[in-house]
Length: 287
Image 1 (tube, rainbow, N blue to C red):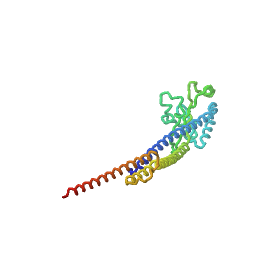
Image 2: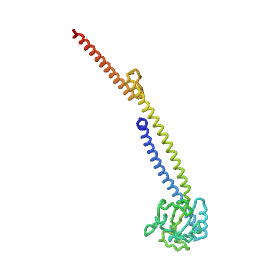
Image 3: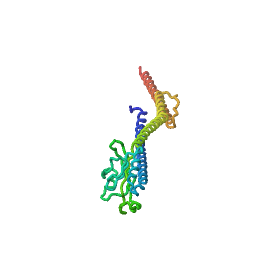
Image 4: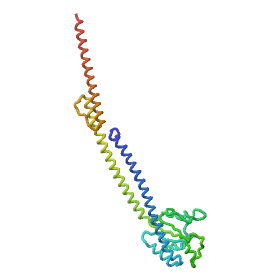
């Protein structure tokens, strides 16, 4: 299989191009996946900030009924898996799902342990560290964001609040968005990248094979035919013009074959002349 020049030339090129295209597509997919995921996290973080601002007025006036209605109405939006607010102890005070009210959040789960990994909980985290992905009880992929509710001057100066000024965080808002749109988009992007890589691979290999055939294989085949004719004593064949190098090689082969043929003819003539001289000498020596 690898004895022909075509196979030995095309197969390594095929392997090299395939590996290059696969590696490039994998790197491109990884970069795009990271960028798209980060954008989804930023979008979810903005939604969390919007919810905090929407509930701010009810919180300042300690209107728990209005706050609970706001949380439940927000939770009915498509794509929202859960919305809940819990205090610094982890007790869920408000939730879109009534069954979660009064429960404690596990501080060792993702989204909580980033702040509670040290004896003194962290008061601020970056957007990427606030996000977590998990499968809920229904088996649906969820992208969750935890956003702290900070103690602002309007909070500890209000008559109905008892939060001291030194308390930085009053509670935490936790929202969960369905990760299905993100996963579907990543799956579509992956399939399109695979199709694109196959197209690039086929076009590249086809172009390389065509160039090799035109500039290498056909000239070498013509040179091999010309060489066989020259070796067999046919010097009337036209020198194949397939590039300066091939033409020079063919010309040199013709010269060498011609010189070799002349040498053979001279040797043949010299051998026949010596045989005639020996026969004539033997005739003269007879009585």
